[in-house]
Length: 82
Image 1 (cartoon, rainbow, N blue to C red):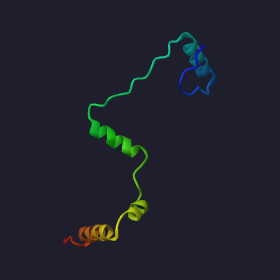
Image 2: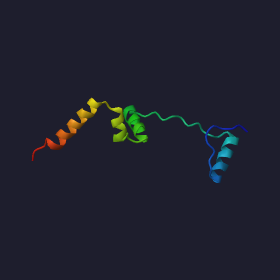
Image 3: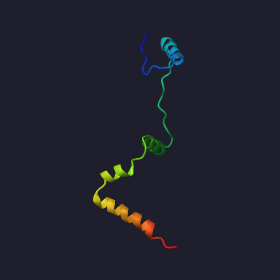
Image 4: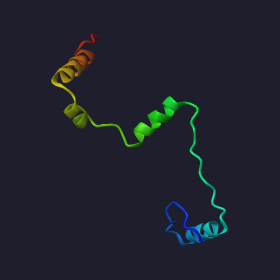
């Protein structure tokens, strides 16, 4: 019996099926899915870990970048006239 790649299932029923598949050689190799829209795929992969929070974002920015963003936010908030 050859040892297959991948994790062994913890559930006894799934483990039994996994062992049978391994012993009969009927485990199918999973081919990577190639997306049609690579940009959308990479966007989804980037969001998988969550967006970077504001505090972490501020740590990586320079003082000039922070000032520019703050000025834009102030203009958006206070620049409107009803």
